[in-house]
Structure formats: C-alpha cells, structure tokens
Image (tube, rainbow, N blue to C red; front, side):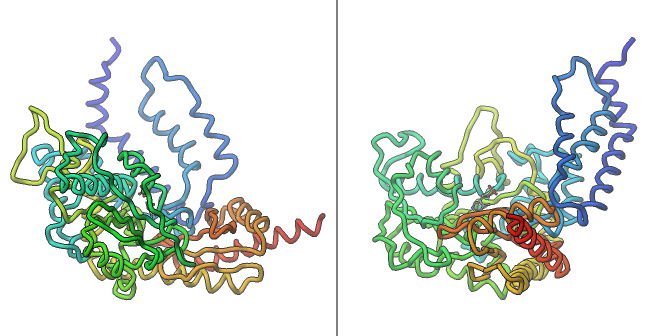
Length: 470
Ligand SMILES: *Cc1c(COP(=O)(O)O)cnc(C)c1O
C-alpha cells in the first residue's frame, strides 16, 4: 500500500534530512551572495520558465521540490542582502535577524492574540517600549507590527480619519463616509505614492489634498502651508525617496498643534535618523506628531517584511483597526491584532526584537551612520569621474546622480544594470532623468562603494564608445 501523506510528513519532520538540506542550500547562498552578480544573469531569467508547469496530479518528493527551488530559484534572486544593491530603498538583513527568523519559522506563530502566542505578545510589548524610547515619542504611544510602511501609512491615516470625525460626533466605523464632515488633507508634492494609495483606500479622496510645493531638496515649503484646523490631516515625510530630505517637523508640527490638526509622518527609512546622534537634527520635532510609519526592513536591516505604525492616540488607532467576534478571547496582555489591519499575520516581531537587542542603541547609531558616510563617499567619488553630477545634498543615505542629458543618464543606467556589478534604479527629479543610489545595507564597505563607482564609470565609457560608432 502507498504510504499516506500524513505518514510521510511525520517521517520528514522526524528525519530532518529535508530541513538540513534547506539549511545547506541557504548557507551556500550566504557564501555567494556578498560577491556575486547583483542582478540575475540573462540565463538565470530564461531558466525561470522551468516553473511554468501545471499543478501536478500527484505528490512530488520534498527533495525534488527543494532542489527545483534551489537550482532555478536561487540564481534568479536579486542580491539585496549584499553591499552593492542600491535600488529603491532596500535594506539587507543582519545574521541575527536571519537566525531569529529561521528559528521562528519552526515556531510558526500567529501573534494575533496573547492566547495564540504569548511570546509574540510579550516581544511586541517590549519592542513597543524600545521604539518609543529610541524615537523619543510620547510614552502613551502604541505600536502595530505590519508588513511595511504602505500598511503603516494606511493604519496611521485610518486613526487620523477616526479621530477627526469622532471629534465632530461622527463615528466613521458605523456611519461611514457618506455625508460625513469633510476632512482636509495637506501634503507635500513629494509625498510617497503609498500615502496617496492610503488616502484612496480610506475614501478620503486624492482630490481633497491641498498640495504644498517642495524646495530644491523636496522639502515642503513651510511658508506655503495653508491655514490648518482641527479637521485637517497634515502628512509629512522623514526621508524623501529621491533626495533623502526631511520636512521641517519642528515648525510644521508646532503650527499643527496650535490648530489642532493631525500630523502623520511617513518615515519609512528616515525616521531612523532619530536614533543616530549625528543625524537626529534631521528629525527634530517628530515627537509632536500624532502618528508615524517606519520600516524595519529598510534602514534597520531586519529581514523582510517588517513595518511599524505608531500612534500617540491609542484609542483612535485601536478603534480604527478593531474587530470583534464571539470566539475572540481578550486578555490583560497585548493582543496584537487590535493594532493591525490583519487578524493573522506572521510573528515578524521576533526578528525585529532580535535585531534591536543585538545592535543596541550604539550599534544602531554606528550601522546607520555608516550608510550615511558611504552615501557621501559615493557622491564624492563619482563627482571625480567626468560626466556625473550630484543633484541633492547628501543629508542621509540617498544620492541623486545625473549625466549631461536624459539620454545619456538613461543609457548609463541601463549599462550599470547590465554590468550587474551593482544595481541602482532610475527616477525623475525636477524634470530630469536621474539615477537614484540608496545606501541601505550594513554590508556596504568603502571598497564596495569604490567598486560600484568604477562600474558607473565603465557604464559611461560604454556610452562614449557607442556614440563614436555613429
Ligand atoms: C518604501 C517607502 C514606503 C513604502 O514602504 P513599504 O515598506 O515598501 O510598504 C513609503 N514611504 C516611503 C518614504 C518609502 O521609502
């Protein structure tokens, strides 16, 4: 008789060969990833067609499944873990984060409620306190552990929506938005698209936004901010995705406080400046806001995915995200689901806790300051190569690189990406095509920067050779 799936599963759990094999493959990956081509080769991409198959009728052996993944999946990964990935704003991961996540994989916890995962609940409570301390936020602040800043922005703005309407005796949960008092939104022209998405999802309407122009670095022009009132949400940014610039929180939050407006800060990667002694001048005044969104997976380098929403108005946040059910067991301990849109979610708190505990305040300071210094190094070195201009002040970890024309910039970017020595993405900055370099990995050394600048140099030389051919 054929063995049942169940008996095979028990056997595999007991035998562990499969799990050791996965470990072995993973360790091989770690041995290669810091030195390999950053983007997959053309061949690796072609080989992905190996996955184009119908769902099999019968069970496949675990070994075969894992082997297929390792053989064709591994080469098609992007080496975001390494030190020469400068695309988007993408963090690496610390060994302790990977290790904690690895251990937690086997625990397979769902920290929705304390009764579902006491360890998840405990670590969420502890990290909430740590983050309040690290970011210097009001002690009454609550934190929710979500998938990223997209979700954190949504939650922060949901809390804002709830509070502003509740203050006008309108319960948005019950009464919805039809006929509700109007909510004004003030945001900078450079607000991140996930903020706009959240405004859309929340039914506030992007047409309701009163846009404020940015200065040369993308910071909101403070004197162009309209009069605020208690029906307004002001959305600020810690870290512009192109320039890395920070809004003037101190001035704007003071204005908002006097008017009774709600301030939400999208600090996906930039809020961490507050944890670096030499950079905390950038985030001066953030404690005067009402809600904050930040990622663990970017600047802090926790494994993916890890986002955090924090809100000083805990009641508004839990009211906005609350759910009930006859089977829900509330306890005196923390029930994580009251602070997140999801009921079930993975226990990402485990890696976040481990990463914070491992680094400590000094380690966080040192690691993030290194990203800042490597960004400055990149700017300094690339300026020495003819044909490159830097378009921003390097206040944090972002560098905007431009060539003599849009066409050359685009070609250089394409060449850089094809060389695969490092990876950066494109953007548009004040109407010009630019290359955006984001230094976001603990693993970026001075040598890696020099190696990457050389690749940019090679890429621009390739353009010149090409144009000579015409
Ligand atoms: C990355 C980013 C986001 C979105 O965060 P995710 O973690 O990708 O969801 C929002 N705002 C800013 C400024 C960002 O850099």
